[in-house]
Image 1 (cartoon, protein in one colour):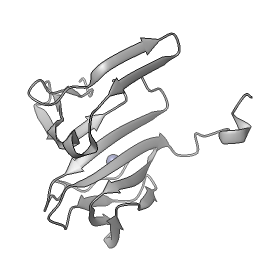
Image 2 (cartoon, protein in one colour):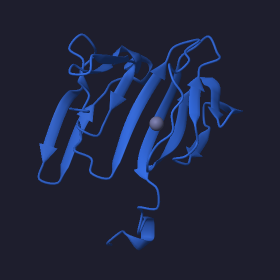
Image 3 (cartoon, helix red, strand yellow):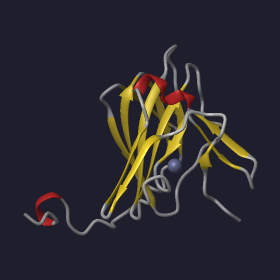
Image 4 (cartoon, protein in one colour):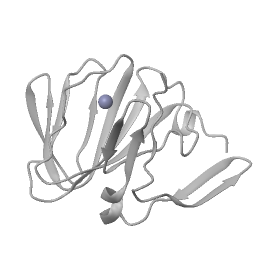
Length: 153
Ligand code: ZN
């Protein structure tokens, strides 16, 4: 079963994809237009509107990153937890609620929130405007060095 999502043909497409020996870059456009993207898995017949996954676009090897535009009143269709990945949520725009293990946590522009893999979560946009959230999935306890302990200067 192929679990990869691709950019849906009837949605917005990344522009100016540029590859070098040691980098890949793409332009996603204005933050207010990110809701026009959609990702789909044709094999499973799943289409997610307003979602951008960066793992395959940028050949990421240690994280999956999604940029999500949740429309007014949106509520995720199901609660979920993860096997191994913690999820860092960075709220760029809007406001809403993330329920974790039944506890409702208010989020808004500028909020950052990490959820451990075991946390059973559900995101809701309780406002009448778009909620834009970057979600970074990383295997828990996978980071060995960071910033000054990983940089070679
Ligand atoms: Zn998740």
